[in-house]
Image 1 (cartoon, rainbow, N blue to C red):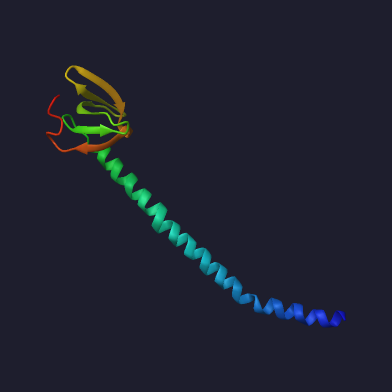
Image 2 (image 1 turned 30 degrees about the vertical axis):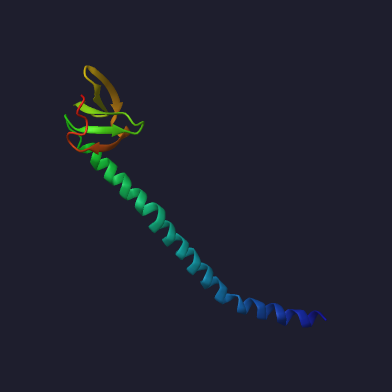
Length: 109
């Protein structure tokens, strides 16, 4: 009876060799999916944001992450001064800038 089980076990190991290649192909497929759907777009957005921050200059009209809009009056290394109303300035971090608005968007300042 024991001799009957041993050949079946050897046959099962031989047939599962093709399954290892399939697992490797699936793993590579998952890595490619994560790369094209998550990592690549995120790094592209980070690069665009870094370029946006480096191109800030005095007089630009911007909106920050909290929704506050204003005109840049001073640009430092890490902070910018933002005029949100006539005579009212606030200092915000450069990284909080969400977008640069077209010139003339803020007419009341």
